[in-house]
Image (cartoon, rainbow, N blue to C red; front, side, top):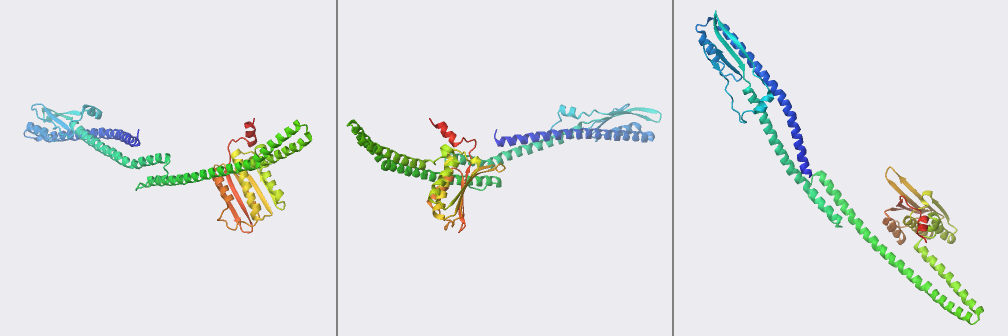
Length: 458
């Protein structure tokens, strides 16, 4: 059921409950009012008759006086009065007219006021002139209560109908922007991130519209950034494949050709019984194989950090540091890795190694530091729902001279961190050092790198 009809149904329920409560209160008041009115009319009528009979003791014509007494009740709305005796005088209330018609039988029964009567004997002197009968007639009073009830019911009906009509129209106009919002969301879901909503709206809907427009703008920015990152990734992949192809062509392929030639020559010399001469060619084959092993190891190092799959993140970071410690032994290196970060997933572990490798290379080559520290720790904040791996590579060198201009290495780090949903920041103070701080999402329920690689092995 739509919201519009739900609201109309709710209003109907409220009106029905209000009508039921109002009817109960009206019934209680009406019944008491009719009963009180009838009782008061009866007491007044009887007092009038009794007082008149006392005055008739000196009347010259008692019969005429009695007829006049009965006739005096002709204008009364609540009493029927008649004379039982020598005359047949009577006074009956005229039934009033109603714009809502006569009250139905169920309403009369609901009010439930029975007529009340009394017989007053008329004795003047020693002569008995019969009896005057007084009886209440609640029809006119019941009719008056019925008119009030029907008028209230009609007013409530008109009010309820008008309210439901206004709700139908107003809610329809109010929900119209939501239809536009639903259509806009479908467009965004189809990838049309330039969709925007405009127009004047109620404050609540205006906030919703503004939030939608901000969301669409951020999605458009994110989509553009994803396209740029994908293009950059494809470019890097092609460059890396080109480098591998050149290495295979320039470094591996010639040695394979040389091995093949040496093997053929050695085989021919052995067949000729010249084993001593073949030994030199066998040595050349061994040297070529060692050269290719070194070359393949170097190629693998570019593709994957050494030691990460076999021994975990700590060993991979230590290998990166050992590379520079052999070349720049005058610099002091410190590595601090939290136990929770020693076994991470392949993607996060590789990213941390690459970031540390690039940041350490920048520090050693450009900062002229005396100390370089690498810190990897888990930053967990349960209250704020944050669970991250924080990598910090800091040096005490001369700092970055132009912090607003990043080199290709730092740009590559920024793109790598952004692709993994992390954040990157830099801290630089002239002559006091430079720090690269990267935060990456901590992998949940992740298998250790070494374990996953072993499971994938033969």
